[in-house]
Length: 441
Image 1: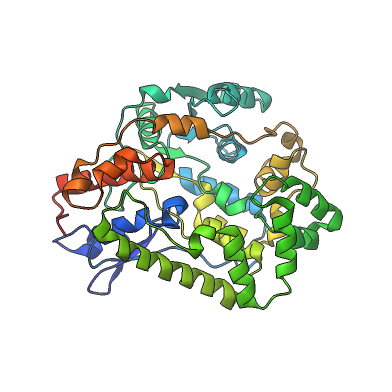
Image 2: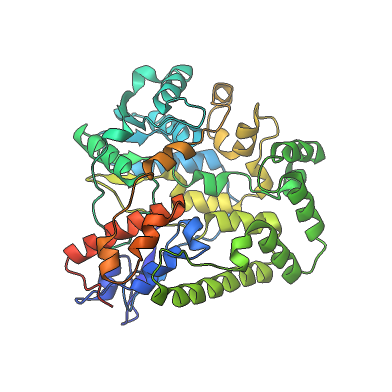
């Protein structure tokens, strides 16, 4: 799995932050403050190390030299590596095709291990419970008798994730994920798999009309334009990306940032952040944006290539939330390298039977041809369920005590991203203090 590395004062590159920090680890509040400035606040990635004197090195594999090869075979090998030596396997099913692809490939192993499927029974934005969707999917694919399905009710999830020195957990519903991890371990599973990372890595990016045309022809590009009409700036954005190809690289990059990431152009710090930390967070954010955009310019990336990279990198590392190994084959280093070697246009499937399956063509292709007609045709969204999960007040006694957050501003905010980050930072800080770390600076 792709994991960050850390560099301490002695210059050694090590896999764990406390190895780099040494015997007197001190929390870097400035690093935590950066989580509350755009673009990090909405990007959900680790901006830097959270320990004084420790540098974070984000992982980013080079594209495979083979041109990517057989992506299905690479994914199958990634799944096999994830479950090696496991007596039983758990798979977290969300109702989408990413986690379904993981389940399919686990069951395709020879011999296939006993499999437990877990689904958090969230109600999607069309008021359909996730368990209803997952049961239907398992029936449609003929998997119901091969999987032990466990339905987890989110309102009953009270398990807190274990503390990790890697930093705050930026998953949307950490208590739900921790509960699933504990239940999976109690069921006898040795590893919990998910489809995490697929949306960011293998979905066709915005602005890819030329890339799709290069791979599939202009008829497919017209279909792509129709499918992207409701995404981002729709057709107008796609046409702008085509026109921007005529611009010099620096102007093309500036136009891309202005259209796609307006919050990058003028980074802002959330008002929940104590005033003493805002300038540092904004200084870091401005330099981060300059570095990212300079990289796009030097590489002469198209809008599509820039967007594909920005969606994936840098990627937050989520350590296990409970007493079981957690992994996603989509984050396997060899699979990521293979995807990065493929032309962006290959991520689109012009003959998929719905917009969802067309923009997720690279994932749909992980299933046998005769199975693709039975895959779910629509993407499910859980924005209302997420809003309900963070509807109540968030207490920040530790973050307030060390002078990082303003409790009055925390109580007043209605921004879901800010609430999620606030809860994650408070949980991590209190855990760090309980573990004996100094958080006074």
